[in-house]
Image 1 (cartoon, rainbow, N blue to C red):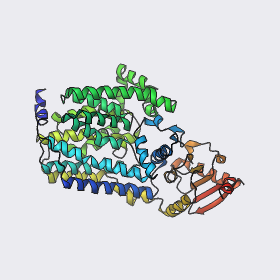
Image 2: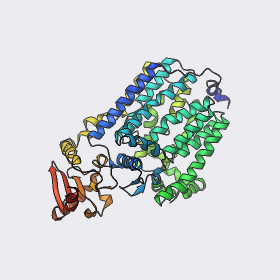
Image 3: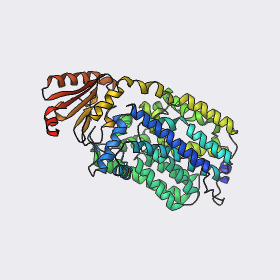
Image 4: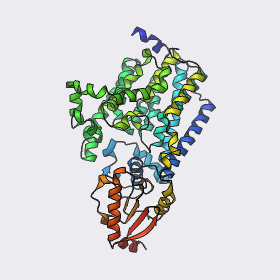
Length: 483
C-alpha cells in the first residue's frame, strides 16, 4: 500500500471543508441546465423521442399521479417489475402539480448539471486550486456522455450520477446521515445500481479507509440486489429480471448467472476480449486519458459491476457514449482524474490544454449533429403529427406509432403499431393514429400497411384525418358516445 500514500494524503478529513459554492459555479449550473433542457425539449418537439423509454416512464408517472396502478400499457408491465425504480413515486408528485413530460427533461437536465457541485467540492477537498477545480467542471460538462444521454429520452440513472459523488463527499467528510440518505437515493433509482453501491462499499472499505461507510454500502447494496432481483421484480413482473436475456450464455436466471461466473470463469473470456469491447473502452477513456494515472485508479474498483455488465453483453447500446449504461462508471472516472491531478501525475496539467482536449472530444463524440440530420428526417410530417395528436381526446384507447406515443401517454391504454406487438386487434382501440411514411421501427412498415388496409375495410372505423402520410381513424361507436 506504500505506493498509494499520496492518494490518501490529499484526503485529510481534518482539512477545512470548502462549503461556500462560488457564484460562478451556480451560474454554470443554471446555463447547463437550460441548455440540456432546451435540447431534450426540442428533440421531443421534433417527434424524435420514443415510446421506449420516454413514453414508458411518462405513462407510469401519470398513472401514479392519478392514483392508478402504474401498469405500462405498451407491455402491460408494472413499473416496479421493470427495474424496481421506486424513485418514480416521489417524482410523480411533479405530475400531481401538472402532468407534463417536460418535468422529466427538467429533472434530467438538473441532475446532470448539479453534478458539478460535488465535483467542485471533491476537487477542492483534494487540494486543487479554484482554476483546476473549475477545469474539472468544464471537463465534466464537455464529456460526450453527458450531452448524449440527455438526448436519449429519460433514465433514472441520471439522478444517481450526482448522488454517487454526494455519497463520496459525505464519506470523506464523515457525514454519516447524509451518506445513508445518498445511498438510499441511489438504490431507489434502479435495481442494478445496487451492484455499484456494493462495489463502492469495497472501495471505501479497503482503499479509502472509511470502514463504517464501506461496510454499510456493501451490506445495503448486496441486500437490495437480492431483494429486488429475487422478490420485488419477480413479484411485479412475474418473471426474471428483463436484462437476464442479454447474458443467456451464462444462464437463464440471476442466480444461475452468478453461479456460472464463479464456477466457470472461462465462459467470460471470449466475451470480454472483443473488438467491440476494445472500442468501447477507448471511447470511454479517451476524453479523460490526459488525467488518468495507474497509481490513482482505485476508485474504478466501484465500476467493476457496471464494466462487467457492459463488456459481457452483445447488446450494442451498452457499449457506447450515447445510452445510459455507462453512467455508473463516470463518477469514479472523475474521482480518479481528480486524484491524479491533485498529485500532479497527469499527462496534461495546464487548464487551457485540458479544456482544449475535452472540447475536441466533445466535438468528435457529441451527438449535437443529430439536430441537423436524423432529428429532421420526419420534418415533412411534423405539422401533420402535431395536428393529429390534438384530435385525440383524453382517456381514449389509442394505437399509434412509437414516435407519436410519448405525446399521448397520459391515458391508461396506449399500444404501439409495431411488428413486435403483432397480432394487433384493431377492435381494442378507440383511436388509431399512424405515420405511414415513418413507422418508428424499421421492421414495421408492413405491419402499418396491413393495419391501414384493415381500417379502410372495416365499417366501424372512420377516417378522421389524413395529411402527409399521417392517418387518424376513429372507432365510430366510440366517437358517437363522446359527441
